[in-house]
Image (tube, rainbow, N blue to C red):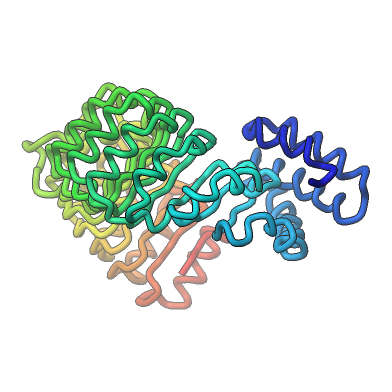
Length: 410
């Protein structure tokens, strides 16, 4: 046992508190040598944890973090050797690990003694599923991932019935064939009341699962909900859009969820625009669907992904004419059949003055369309513009770079 063990015990006992980590860093400073470098690393990562992505101090801190990990990463990871892979350091310690379920069942005590783990990826569930979800060590987690295990409805029931997951704030169960019954076991479980992030992508969920989610008692706490690659359909989306319990969701992922074809007279999609970050890519949405999307209550959407929907000029015109998008700061239209004419319509929209990021990659738009952007009186806040890799001349690229300095990406 090292002389720092009393400090480490306190870090493990209070994993969300920065205080014990800073006390340990002070003690390590007094030891000098490599110990002092570990103190620097703890403080660097604590600083990074509290900084926004665009903070000017972030690049220097990231460089310091990388240099220290390059030098000491193997040493600091040694206690996990033979127990876990995919180690991720946060706030100075290993925070996230990947562990086969059979190893977790057998070695959970050693694993959590090695560091204040908060995010566990369970691998190779197989026959270890019941024993894994009987482990009281799950109570130390803030996040749990079980990805692509194809464990079926049994996984949903095991998670829903587990008495040790009351501290979870994030649960990622993508690609597990949960189906509606497995999802229902999750969303009605009283043991998951603190969830803020729930990811259930690619799980064969239908509109029935969407309706169960819309009525979940966990809804008021949820901030991120990922449901991509599930056949929810327009009716399922309407249930989510109109749910009072999901009013606090800040990001909703509905990519490739079969939402197209309802039109403005079909199940209402308009309530979806109350979500600040919304992914509707790959849904077969057309102009009529966009009209339905804009027909709801006042919009709060700030980030909107409509990529891989065949919008064309008519769809882009519906989009550009929508005052509901006046608050947009990010718009992705990758692969939406945006032509030169459609680009001109978009550039002339009176509702996109707050736009900071626009992605028009993989569209048949060239010099003519982007000349409309060069002449546009608005778009004053644009910080990032993505244009197609072909079809735009070097002269137009250079002009775009002058019009929007430092923002053009090809």
